[in-house]
Picture 1 (spheres, rainbow, N blue to C red):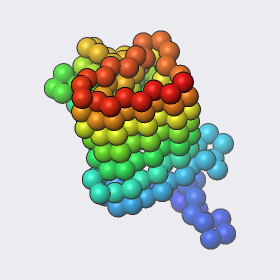
Picture 2: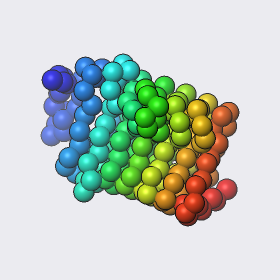
Picture 3: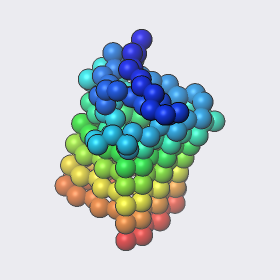
Length: 193
């Protein structure tokens, strides 16, 4: 069970505490949702304390997350996020997430089989035992706009991103440190600056 302290400002609901530590169970989003923490000076921090991933986004849902930090997620694949729906991340940080086994061990921060758009997102210090330290894309579509991948690593390939049987678009995005892109056929890459 999660306990989140809410307050009411005018007609809008707000979260009193900006840091939420999960108790070992991920949060499943099975309905369309917009969550915006950008009004808080440092956004909302969701910390899984290495006991689970942070979010599972179900197929058929449209989710937009803004102003969040997702940290210390740990799971067999998709350390912070397992996305099968349509997910947009805005001004969000994913840091220190990892896969915790070699089976499958893909997607240190994000394992994607749906549609994923990252706008001004930073992925740093994430690790996958096999592929895609930052992101592993399997048959989905990933678009990165004005984002940064730095210091992510993978035991096999794609410290930053590994994409297989999907579409990958990278626009005005910085990759540094161990953040490399690995593309397996028949991925349709489109790299722009």
